[in-house]
Image 1 (tube, rainbow, N blue to C red):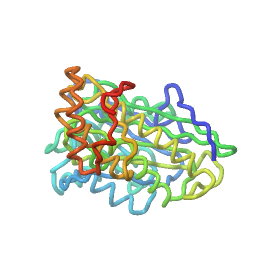
Image 2 (cartoon, helix red, strand yellow):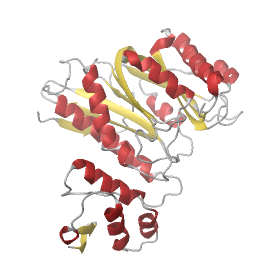
Image 3 (cartoon, rainbow, N blue to C red):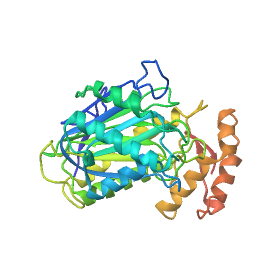
Image 4 (cartoon, rainbow, N blue to C red):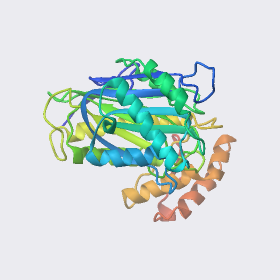
Length: 351
């Protein structure tokens, strides 16, 4: 079905109906500062929820806890902090993550098991639970609080990353919004960052998971900055259904419109992450057409954007197209040399 999708000026994760957020300074990043580092995203009604997590074998405590709680496929809120990853902290770290969820739940007035947890920051340090406990009740949830939440999840990011789109599809109107953080430890290996997505569309649980995986595969899984994968990576999508309308399912009337809008949000956030990479001065986008399969196209594109030689050529303003060809050739994708065309922008370098 044809659908009109418009980016919302100043849109964020709380642009969809029924979502609220807020943030405060708990002194996690630095004590005695006003820098936001603790926040909550909350839906006024229960959400169908899905997430993708890091493939790093060392998984941070909030990842372990959130994966367990998402087995029920629902959530009402997520509490998130920056400045401390709560990774490689053992059983004490798990208790800290559970405690943070409990504190958030008490402040909102919901059950702790309906709260997910996400953390980002320094690995190997315990969360300062006393400071978190003393400050979490200062978080004021509001419909425009997504902007503060986007700032609260920043670590080495230089700018907050947030976006929202409104979709009109012949009676199937809904909104999707999101925020993300990512500047270092970014590589195409599942989630590769921290991202919170929200929608007021009513979505069938199985399709929600499938749609999220498809969107991540064409966005976050295609970005690379430094080749590292964090133990805290998480992309979360919550759908509360408050926009009304029929439930969106695979093959349904609005499935294509929802998938397209979700991918648009994820791609927009991905571009923001790549542009804000640690030490980045240029943004590289690679488009592959004519590959034997979509999987091979992705393989070739990932190899090119991950190549140190390609990156140094672009950084130095050196149109050394041989480095791109070398990357494609070693990518593992099938390549017929005589049929290769290579463009730099609109300029054909090989063809």
